[in-house]
Amino acid sequence: DTGVSQDPRHKITKRGQNVTFRCDPISEHNRLYWYRQTLGQGPEFLTYFQNEAQLEKSRLLSDRFSAERPKGSFSTLEIQRTEQGDSAMYLCASRTLQGVNTEAFFGQGTRLTVV
Amino acid sequence: ILNVEQSPQSLHVQEGDSTNFTCSFPSSNFYALHWYRWETAKSPEALFVMTLNGDEKKKGRISATLNTKEGYSYLYIKGSQPEDSATYLCAPLIYNQGGKLIFGQGTELSVKP
Image (cartoon, rainbow over all chains, first blue to last red; front, side, top):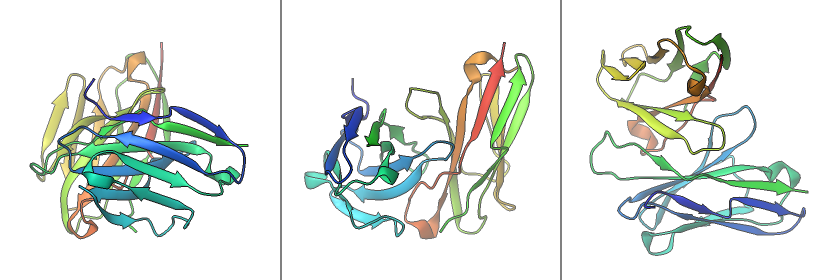
């Protein structure tokens, strides 16, 4: 399978713990996006990368969230000191910049539950 | 913050009905609009990427039109089937937004047999 993969698919954690999610994009895709989705809402933009460079982090995002994309390949999203409000689906998507008409490909997401 | 609005938020139709919903976005500095379908327990999948004013795209029973001057796009489904049940998301690409895909809240479609 050469699509976008995310790991883990589900994560249950206690409030206050740190969690890290991984995204493996399609290999030739230089853009990588992270989103958060809660019930009844569309995907909320968190951050995105072009190769290894983080281009922007949402101003709405707490400092407890950090993301990396070392070597421009896989990416990790870490949430420190989790809170119940962090419970959501975390989606990763990747896209090539070869042409303006390129679509994004999504992983199946990581469902986080903070108890 | 880019304002992307989709309406209605949810829609319930009977099998065989035709339906349509709207995506509204800022018209200035626009260069592309993406439509995605997100079925439960699956990943969002691209339906269309549209760039030209007046463009119309079609995939089976689903089609979309684009008005870049007034900043909206319509998605049409002809003869809805239960397998069309999903959330439909749009995301415009705007030049001064650095290539971010900012999604609307989606339209949740439920098609009853």
